[in-house]
Amino acid sequence: MNINNERSLNFLEEIIEADLASGKYASILTRFPPEPNGYLHIGHAKSICLNFGLAKKYGGQTNLRFDDTNPVKEEVEYVDSIKADVRWLGFEWAGEYYASDYFEQLYEWAHLLINKDLAYIDDQSQEEIRLGRGTITRAGTESPFRNRSVEENRLLFTQMRDGKFNEGEKVLRAKINMAHPNMLMRDPILYRIIHASHHRTGDRWCIYPMYDYAHGQSDSIERITHSICTLEFDVHRPLYDWFIEKLEIFPSHQYEFARLNLTYTVMSKRKLLELVKAGFVSGWDDPRIPTICGLRRRGYTPESIRLFADKVGVAKRDNVIDLGLLEWCVREDLNKRATRFMAVLNPIKVVITNYPKDKEELLEAPVNPEDSTAGSRKLTFCREIYIEREDFLENPPKKYFRLCPGGEVRLKYGYIIKCEEVIKDDSGEILEIRCSYDPDSRSGVWRSVKGTIHWVAAAHAQQAEVRLFDRLFTEAYMDNIPEGSDYRDFLNPDSLKTVTAFIEPALADEPARFPVQFERLGYFIADSQDAPDKRVFNRTVTLKDTWAKTAKP
Ligand code: ATP
Ligand code: MG
Image 1 (cartoon, rainbow, N blue to C red):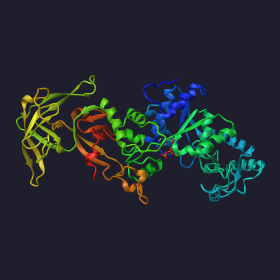
Image 2 (cartoon, rainbow, N blue to C red):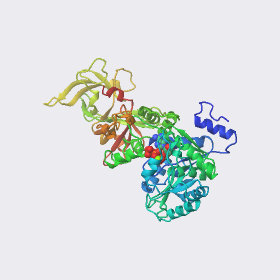
Image 3 (spheres, rainbow, N blue to C red):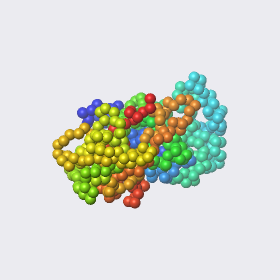
Image 4 (cartoon, helix red, strand yellow):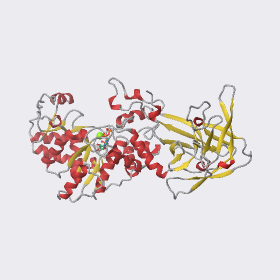
């Protein structure tokens, strides 16, 4: 069966198609297994799109499973945000599960391993256990407690559960092989004692399973067919398979793909948490960090993130994806859907001296030139307007096509104006530019000038706060920063610039929860702090990748 003929299959699709063709599985079941210890980021989005996307493509289903085996770091706030983010990305899960729901089953299975003499209680300290593991080149040494009787192990494990011991006093370990070439197979710890309240199970448990023991067994309990995780877990696979074999449970299979890394940002929950806690950013939804809620507030759409996940594909080797690709994807999507408006971010006043003082006229502009059904909007034109300070140069270089003394430029959707005079204050600061206009040059009537600039009518424009975001870090490869330096040393001091802009009055009336394009400037979205009496817009992305031009040598 080859459902997708247009494009070559990725390695996971190949595996799934083979498994369905051979009849190994009648249908597939994947899962997305976040630990609720932080907000999801774009790396998780990649994993979500992959797990849900594969199931959807092959008529299967996906579970959402919270890997909540560590009571110390996990919170309900995170559970709720994760669910909201997965839904926002456009996916619905078949079952909502919690590894903590399986604690009883996992505990019984641990007894099964003890009964088969495949697990034992170790009284060594954490440090002794660590040292006993050996190194990659040197075999480990067996614990003096390794050969406890099955009966004693059973009793001690029951007492562990009953809270008879302090943290660190005892652990349950698998009895595998202390000389195994894979360090993770040298009698890994299955359970440790933590006297802490869990966000779901309360104080019912004081022993908690380790990731390796909980994760694969949870997959088995749910009968997950393809358990997809990131590359660093490939060394865990032998252990994953060992538990399935020894417990004789449903044979889920683990497959690994390269985790997503992006230039100019950090992706780990730990670092993001540090940035939030230390106030380097305003919160988990700060539009500069790659959390899903940050991207949403920044104006990214679910479609753009799904497109990005698709373009990145699935790799078997770690790499770093250019942030430019993510920006390209959001431009692709917003170009099709963003409503066009004009806004001037750095205004300078232009007076059109031959335009009557009390005259006003309505000009027409498309709502979205990419969408012929979107219709048109009206723009009020009058004698005084604002243009962008950057669109005027007193001493222009050759081939400068915007406004300059004696030069002509077209006002978008309007007339051609000519700069006649520049008015300055005593310090030489330009106060206003006086222009004449050509009444016969209204847009649509053919007369060509090289440059077109955007503008807003001074009497009608409304003020808005506009937040211009840039990269959070100055360094592209944040995983490769020099040894001894801290990632926080590379924070971009100019990652947020706030300006007071003038916006087209039609936009001022809008509640504007939809993406907009400020013509010639970029894509923007009303911020969550936007209010009718104080408009606030976030720049999602510029229209073109401007970084290359402005990058310091
Ligand atoms: P972090 O390292 O950022 O804290 P994590 O891997 O600890 O992330 P989990 O909640 O355990 O976060 O991850 C849930 C799922 O998302 C896992 O299957 C994990 O492999 C996947 N995932 C996490 N980060 C990435 C990433 N950068 N790219 C792709 N998948 C990821
Ligand atoms: Mg994790």
